[in-house]
Amino acid sequence: MNENTRENAPAAPPAGPPVSPTAGTPTTNGKRRKLLLIIVTIFAVVAIGWLLLWVLVFSRRETTDDAYVAGDQVGVSAQTAGTVVALLADDTQRVEGGQVLVQLDPTDNEVMLAHAAATLSLSVRQTQQQDEMAGEADAQTASRRLELKQAEDELARRQPLLEQRAIAKEELERASTAVEVAHANLAAATRQAGAAHALVEGSSLATNPAVQEARAQFIQAWIAARRTRVRAPTAGYVARRNVQVGQRVPAGQTLLTIVPLDKLWVDANFKEGQLRSLRIDQPVRIQSDLYGGKFEFHGRVGGMSAGTGAAFSLLPAQNATGNWIKVVQRVPVRILLDAKELIDHPLRIGLSTLVNVDTRDQGGAVLAAVAGAAATASTSIYDDDFRAAGQAADALIRGEPLIQP
Image (cartoon, rainbow, N blue to C red):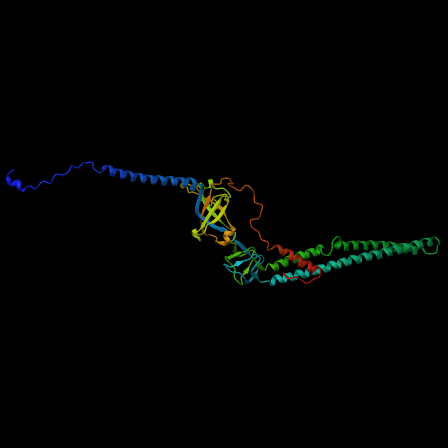
């Protein structure tokens, strides 16, 4: 290398301490291991927590959001035909049991009631007349008996006189004929008395068959007149009014519907695979979309349907075809709600709910084993109709004024 080359070459850097090729590697790897260990630990804890949560909580609950509020829809029908003259309740209004909801024109029924009352009063008077006629027949029988005795006495006095030739034979024959006539008259009077007594014998005025028949017709007319006022069979809220003023309605036509909102339940449609852990009387928590998470209803499993919803549909599925796709079926399960909670937080029929059943208690029955003895629903508003009609009929029999229905 010549001198010029050495002068133009760059100067060499100053020598420093030697650098190790593996410097800093243990520290970096240790941090990575710790980070990976933390991440694995977190995932393991989450997995164990989720497993415990599933085993201890989720596996012991059955949940569905295919659940809806249901309740009775009490149809109020006309019990007699008539023309609507007044509507005393409308949709959304609350009514009490026995309250008059619809007034029908009472004219025809009042005319029938007046006719039945007159028939009953006439029947009572005819029965009294028959009783008097029976007494008159008894008196006639006694009179005929006296006439027979008198004729027999006359015959007995004349028989010795004929032996003494004090009277003619024809006179004795006339006396004998008079006795026979008296016998015939007595027999006729006795039969007439028996016929008169047959109509009134063994019964009082109130229990006479003719009076009882007229009384039954009167009661029927009285109840028909009372039924021109259509009353609510139970307390609740009016829904679906189907009648207008001036409309002619036949007997049996539904005029409106009453929904008792204090007696609701939830029909939860569980998948068939969820039924294996459901039992009657298991506790249930219900959330309604109406209140969201602000309030939670409490209830219990009341029973399970005897078939799937598809089996009871109007057109059940027919799967015996060449092309078939399995569809998971659902079975309605009735959830009974707490009545006090319904009063404080009223629901409506058809609302959506989320149902959560606690299945830890497996001691209950799958299906009801005992037939229910108590009535599921009843009304007492018609109990007094027959009794009140009977009291009005008895008052007429006693001669008192007519008691209006």
